[in-house]
Image (cartoon, rainbow, N blue to C red; front, side):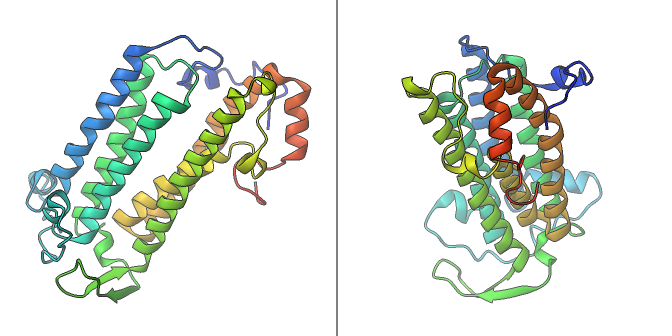
Length: 284
C-alpha cells in the first residue's frame, strides 16, 4: 500500500532504476540494454554446452559438472539446440532467448519512461547474472534439477530414447510460459490504454490490471521462479519466486505506489479500493 509519509522511506528513490514520469529519449540506454541482452544468448549457450564454459568454470572450482552425465538424446533438427545434448540444457537456453526477446520488446516498444545507460546496465547485468547462476547450478551435481523427484518418463519424436523428466521441470516450464505471457500481455494492455487519447491522465484498470495493481510483477516473479525451478528443482524455484515477489512487492511496488498516488491522487485511491490486491490476485 502507499506510504502515508512519502519521506519515511527515502531508500525507495535511491534504488528505483526507472525515471518515473520522465519520457526523454535515452538512446544510449536502449542500445546498452539491447546489446547486453543479446550478448547473454551466446553466453548461456557456452555455459550450457556439454564440456563447455560452465563445466570448465565448475572444474576450476573443484566441482565435477553434471552436464556430461546425461546421454545426448536431443534431435530437433535445430543445431543450436541439438548441440546442447540434453533437453533440459536446451530448455534453459530457450528460456534465456525468450526472456531476452521479451525484455528487448518491452524496452523498444512497450516502455514509456527514460532508461539511462546506468540503469540499463544494472538491469541487463542482473538478468545475465541470474541466468548464468541458473546454468551453473543446473550443471553442478548437488544442485541440478536432473535429480529432482518425482520424475516421469516420456518418449517424444525429437528424443533418441525415453527421457526421465522431473515434475518440477514441467511445473517450472508452465510457470515460465504463463509468467512471461502475463507480463507481456499486462504491459501491452497498459500501453494500448495509455496510447488512446481519451485515456490521457487516467489510471489503467482494464484487462489483467483488474486482477492486481502490479500484475506485471506477478508475471515476472513467476517466469523468473520457473526458470530457476527448471535449473535447480523445487527448493531453488520456490525460493526465487518468493524472493522476486517480496522484492517487487515491497521495493518496486512501493516506489510505484508513491508515484501513482502523487500523480493520480483520488483516481489511484479509487483504483486501490476497486483492486485491493497488490501483486497476487485473491491473496495479497
